[in-house]
Amino acid sequence: MNAQPLTPPTEEPSVAGVRVRPVLPMLLFVLLVGSALLALWAQQSPVAPEPISRFAPWAFLAFAIGFAAYRLALVAAKRYSAFKAFAQIIVAALFFMLLLLPQVAPPLEPAIAPADLLLDRDPRVRALAAEVIGYREAQSVDPAHAKALVALLEDQNAAVREAARKALIQLNGGRELDTPAAWKERFP
Image 1 (cartoon, rainbow, N blue to C red):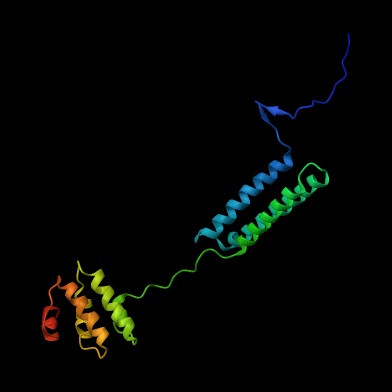
Image 2 (image 1 turned 90 degrees about the horizontal axis):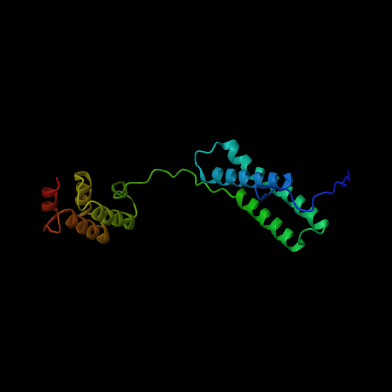
């Protein structure tokens, strides 16, 4: 029998028509996806454990270093464009630097209720708080807020008195009363 010499295949190996890639690029791809998802989740999630939040950017850096070494090896072997390789390495470095920025805002302090601001020292704050209460509570009146607005009818600042009067009119369904005493009677 004639034995034919074995020759290496000239095509890349494939399984069911899908090319099988070398192991290193596949590992780099898995590391990219995993580290990027971990880093983005750790930055956006307020429930991420602190050690994971600290570790996540460095996991992406591990990918970036492996990726850069792989791309530079391809460039040295003249199998990849140097321009594309350096552009990709720069993008990976920029993404890593963005991951170092803190993204989760610290918990907000509890908001100050507008009714609490009716007692502020600044007359502009008192006037604005009265205006906000007038708009917010036009449908459902809180008697404590209405009583605080009635007290502002005797404020030393004219703008505060006017804002309180307008807010009380809104709370009273658009009807105005003549005197502070009438407002006190309406909102005891």
